[in-house]
Image (cartoon, rainbow, N blue to C red; front, side, top):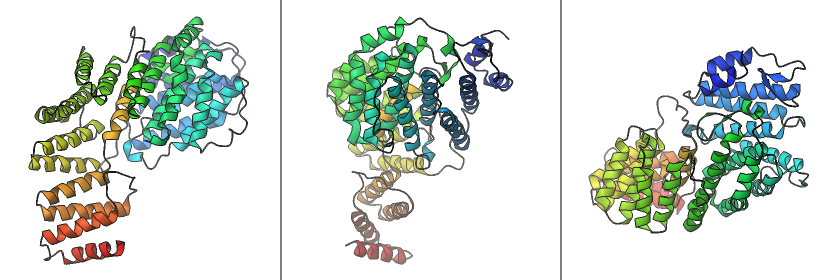
Amino acid sequence: MEENDLLNLYNSGNYIACIQILEGTEILGNDTKYLRVKLKHVNEITRELLYLNNLTLCQAMIEQSGNEGKWSEALNRFMKLQSNYRSLSVIPLELELNVVHNILWWFLTRPHSLRYKTTPQSILDIVSKCLIKVLKSCNESVLGQESCFQDSSCLITLLKRASDQLLRLSSVVCTQLLSVITLTVHLLLRQQNTEFLTEYMGVLRKAIDQLDLLRLHVQRETQRGDEEVYFKFGLTRMNSTASLNNCGDTINAFVITGSIVCAVNNENEQGMDCLKQIAEEGNSFPFISNYLKAYCCLHSQHYNEAKLCLAYTTSSPLPPPHQAHYRLLLARLLSEQGDHKAALLQCEAALASAHSSPGHPSHSLATLMAASEAHHLHLSTAQLNYLKQLVEFFKPKSTEENVKFDGFEEWCLTVLNQQFSVTVHEAVYTLAREQYLAGYHLKALESYNELSELLKSQICESSQLLPRQVQILHETVLAHLKGNSLTGQFDLGLHSCQSFIDHL
């Protein structure tokens, strides 16, 4: 086998052949080669971890269209791998960061149906322990920070301190750490914990302010080559490696993440300032860069600039998922300008998109926005139909949810748009209220009772759209009385009245 055979197979997507080679590899002994690729100063334990990292990633790549059960199995393999080797001082920092990056990347593909079953805290604990190892390698004190892993503020402190060390690390370690910080911030943003939004920007700000130095620092080292055999999930393509050739994409992704933090925190001018730091030459994320500019301009009420930036996003043909998000942002812009008819047409076009299937998040967002535009146009029947579709989106599917590998740009779009999404409780309540207001009192009563069952059986997140339960019960009783539904509904109405009285 030639030295680059494994890399060629991996880069071409032949993961089954990679696994066959990896499983047939002898990792014991004192040779200084791993799959005929020369490694410098590599010991047996490092070769073993490298082998298992690559094997685990290839196994996960084969299951990329698998269901949630296979997703969980792959996550457990990654986490077990990191747990077994993290305490060993002989493991190179760049390899440990590579494994942690893979864990974070895989976790960000988590199926929505596992939202309450798979806690991110265990992933964040892994990140904290890895960051402590980074600080120790720079001879930084970690006193008092090795036993506070359940504390979000402690993790943010570790992220800040680690980002302060970027210029002291080797180019490969610096690049790996940047990607770990980027994905960690994305994971934190997914939690929608607004309390720490400003703190997240503090993590990124200093590094963004010294990007020119970081670029010089990373590019100063010549490519060693041995990091090429560290398989990792990439930000531009899934089957990537830990390579200095990817440093430009890593830095741009870091900057884009900083801009997203600003945008979500309604600091749109600062978000635009961040985007000025992107190296346009060779930028692998042109769509999200222009989309973010349009987003920030829209929320700063600079509508003409927003329209211009949106036009730039279509300078080349868009893949279906990007096309759906483009249409939805354009719909929001048109709505802000009072053109609700055109906005509704854009929402309908997004719903008709090939990628906007009933199981995709953009479908629920498009449905919600379409209902809102129909309301503005006084199209009550259309509004109710859209709201019914929205409720259907949340109902359990007959089959397990497939894992979706959307990639970095889709993750950015998810974070930006999740603040406009609704929960199942909010969707059912909105449908019930609008049915009541439209005079469909019996239908409204059915929806209110569905909401009551949901409130009993499912975790209900805090919401500004959902009133207190006593108010919901009050509306339920009114729907019952207005519907004149004593026949066949007496017990139901009596239960609603009794529940209302109990909450007074």
